[in-house]
Length: 372
Ligand code: SF4
Image 1 (cartoon, rainbow, N blue to C red):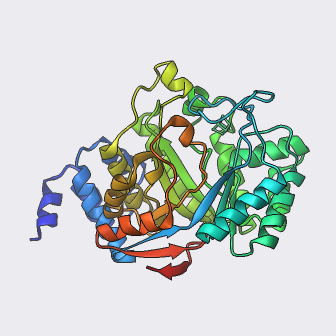
Image 2 (cartoon, rainbow, N blue to C red; image 1 turned 180 degrees about the horizontal axis):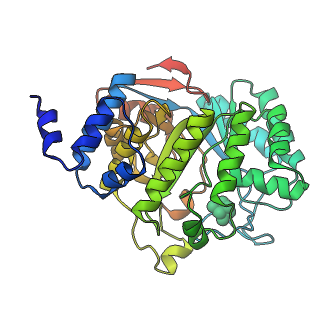
Image 3 (cartoon, rainbow, N blue to C red; image 1 turned 45 degrees about the vertical axis):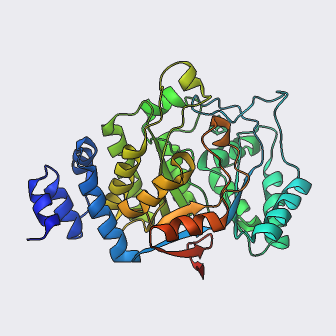
């Protein structure tokens, strides 16, 4: 009997993990049992095993920049240190000229293949702003994929334009939008959203907008922000809601669990959350993500941004296959003071090689661009 099999027999979650190795994904109750268990290492052995079965000892990353086009926002999420209300001294909106010059600098210096274009809910920006920006990017930088606008930004544009979110998606796709980041999901349970982001779109609206995007062939990522007021049961619900939509549409390319960073946020000030969730919790979430989505959502991202490079190296062995992006120019998480949020491709390549893995640079759609 192998050492892993013996360990599985002695664990309270052995049956779930054995099923997982045999290709059977957990449901809500099994997910809850995984979340309740402290057998993180064992979950990681299985998460890592499932990942290596599919990808070998290889990790991908995307050479990208983040363009936070505006910090003006009227949604006041309690976990956000980035936004400023309209008219605030520190508010900004990036002009089309600035979009072009930033893209040019990042393309010339780093050869980026993706721009992640995200910002606040700015009621002054109509759909033309986004259409013009995406057209400009696709025309002048054809090698750069446009990964842009969370479901809640799309909802905001539809409100500004008094039109449907589907119509917004159709127009933005036409202008060059290629894929959608998973932000804005947080925890897809409205009782949680009521506490941390009461003015943001509901869980059903997030899922509906994602479904609309998938229906017109705009793929997306899905995220989960854990480590604040949510319960384990609500995390399990989040995992399952995304699985259900993916079974229907197949439109999610990746899942990214990331931990809430409390620094400089209202939630820290109000003492709702004092500390970030930490490394062991990250590894647990990564392993559970792989186990929950094996054969359903192909990629699990390591989330180095809020947990650092060393934890990302561990995550690659617990179930992640993608390191994420280089994230030049990121401003949202930087506002919490969470580590340096600048990371160039050579540093990612070194970090992956340090653990003896091959590194593959990918494009916006997870197609390989270059093996290092
Ligand atoms: S998380 Fe997004 S929607 Fe919420 S306040 Fe910050 S910028 Fe606005």
